[in-house]
Length: 207
Image (cartoon, rainbow, N blue to C red; front, side, top):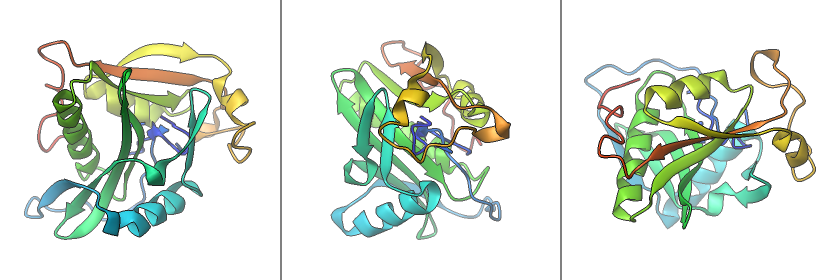
């Protein structure tokens, strides 16, 4: 996404601005195979941690995509933990359009947290009877495009000028994003959950 906080779109690793479901990754030490990675639903007691992680990563909890501003901290969330320490966060919403990944954030790159979070989101989407998992990222977020396509998502649409319009809702969105690319357009990515093989690219340990 770049979902504009990232949205998910957002994975640098951000289901999804540095953003949407586009997501930045902070530097850190890659965990060893001996470390235990788990994913769980965020509880009410995690609200402060969720807000802090979103704000630290994107400057606020506000995410703007497809012309709508959302407070990602108020949405259902999944948290990835390694040996008790939070190492990733995915926020989402389920509507008649499917399960939308609003933001995806990992604290350590190449740790597998993003893949684990996305896999759990797919499981929950299926459980809810959602026809697809989808997200919005931005035209500059090449890392997110790589990440999501390797995990089976496909480009479902491009909204030219959508990021320019989003600046009216969130003026802090920069004019240029990753790699110095001008930020103008939103890219919708989706995983069709009606296909039998959907989600097969989300194998354990994939980074």
